[in-house]
Amino acid sequence: MAINLSKQLFQEAKRYLVGGVNSPVRSFKAVGGLPVFVNHAQGSKLYSECGREFIDYCLSWGALILGHAHPEIVKKLQDAVRRGTSFGTVTKLETELAKIIVEAIPSIEKVRLTNSGTEAVMGAIRLARAYTKKNKIIKFSGSYHGSIDYLLDCDGILKDFKKDTIICPYNNIERVQELVEKHKGDLAGIIIEPVAGNMGVVLPKPGFLEELRKLSDKHSLVLIFDEVITGFRLTYGSSQEYFKVKADLTCLGKIIGGGLPCGAFGGRKEIMELLVPQGSVYQAGTFSGNPLTVSAGLQTLKILFEGNPYKKLEELTKYLCENIRQIAEKFEIKLKINFIGSMFSLFFANREIIDYNTAKTQDADLFKRFYHGLLKEGIYFSPSGFEANFLSTAHTIEDIDKTIEIINKIFKTYIAKN
Ligand code: PLP
Image: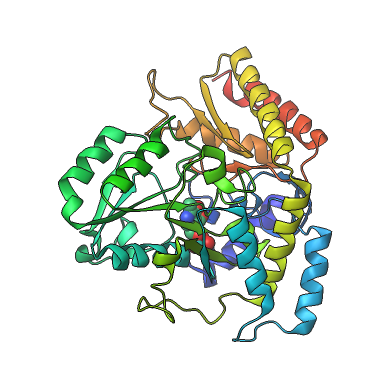
């Protein structure tokens, strides 16, 4: 019955939407099967159109650190919506949000709010190029910074757009040094996810971010931290507080919008002030600093500041991951679990020797089997082996214990025997 309804909904979606979705990974192409059509969500749970309940570890791709429909966010949004949904001019709420961001992340002196992480990254790279008067940007393989022509590798992009993008393996400082040496005459900066979250979770090797900082200082490069995922996720001061390395420019998104579309970039004053209207680098948006987004974001950051839930979130994540690791050992399943703060990924090994620091690696078949086992039992992970999973403050120890119990069952039933 549930499968029939899902099939019907997906077929109908595919008639009108390309691939039935508005963002590709939602189509379940990576794991096969039918996407979960959500009716509503509350706390740590998603409720599907088929009437099923799922413990959600995708959390709108990390945006919902307080869980779904947090009562205080809902209340703020209700108040905000009554006052109007978009003004196209300034509000004092935007200043408040920018102030909170500046106070939380010391390397940020000035902020520009955007509608998405993609726009934030585009703005930051434009600024880096204008500031240095150079063109080239180093990015890391396996990273994702939004659907930006010169950072993507797909059809439809002018070859010329990509010629100034240099791709380097993640965590390989020797290779970065070589590339910087080779291109330094025309190199504007380096952009990195300080913790990679788009090839599954991959942690920076100790010293890697520090070396990038030193190299950027030495060659006057703009170091851009794309903290769209890690911002206000690892700690309140984001990855720069966690790793004690400062960026010149920082991109934010997800959490700072409290579950509404958002983004922001910020950094050193002398770079940020090159933006229009003060400078000559153009950047704009009809809905930038939208009052609903800003209200939800402000409330989210206030709750995070007052509650400081980071230690507890990290402990719960560790508890979940350590338990999964033990179960895998018990069933002799080769599994690597990467986690930090409240983000984690599971990698099923398909080779004897795997370098999890730089390479995408995942046994696709095992992951699919695992994934569908989870869905069947009411657990929703991000629907790809190369995406991160997250915990929220709404996840209880009961949710976690139930998840561990289910994973034990899945490993026993679907993975260990095969
Ligand atoms: N940067 C990173 C690290 C991301 O993970 C994402 C999206 O997942 C983006 C940028 C793009 O953000 P958005 O989807 O809001 O445009």
